[in-house]
Image (cartoon, rainbow, N blue to C red):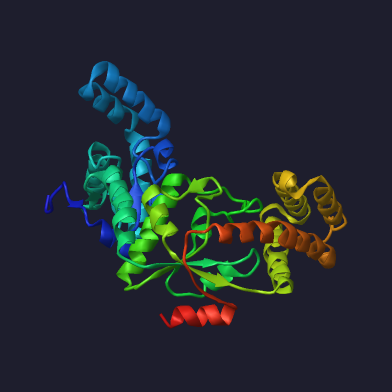
Length: 367
């Protein structure tokens, strides 16, 4: 063996900033709870095999469990799993592998890959557990050293659009895969809380590594859908300086229509087909109305639903534009604007600037 069979890597900062490809050899049930960016799950043992080995370990000890593991992952099963590792590594030569604690499973995978290729692929020292701890500590320590600006404004003012034009921005709603409102659900599921935190930590680390002197994020509540801001990060976020993006109601209606109606319909159509996609989109909007029924009041709720129902046409996307804009206008002016006005009155964040899109864009570029 020409190299150390226990070749380890513990430079997590480098893994993140260089977008190092990773193989997670844990079982799918572990991977589904949370892992890291640029990671593929190619397990040494599947969930059932891991479960059986775990029972054996508790009842008969380590040696018996190890023997069972080798018997379960042998012959054609072993060959198939090694071939998947090797194929991925051939396409991603800088690959690093890991298991939960950086112990037996990743060591076995490392040795089997060497047997097949003659090359030692590094594994993460301390595995997932140590890497995950690094990410959590980064959310605590990194955010203490870089100023934060919060981009606020009424619903539909184009905050996300502007945010994505700004160099030092982090899109929290994009990471959480949720728009942060009663109408915030995407067709695809949100990430697990662990994945959300890991992605957020990675974004902050990358921004700092690129030399960012400050960060910009959209104003959000503690929860973004089912994900939430971890405690240390929430404290940092709560102390950010607030910049308000202003836009007239007519412009906000158009922006909201484009995002929540036109683009959303197209996405549903792409995923589900035109007819089924529009039906599913309509159900999503009607369900979202129900979520805020009590706050709207029964009369306003019925009016909005009636307006929305006049737009129903499963044969055509982007139809009945003006009727869509009518219910959007009611929601913005009589629900979201009132809610945001209350939020601004009670905010603890210091408002340092207000302006339209160009003015806010120039403000940030002048920092």
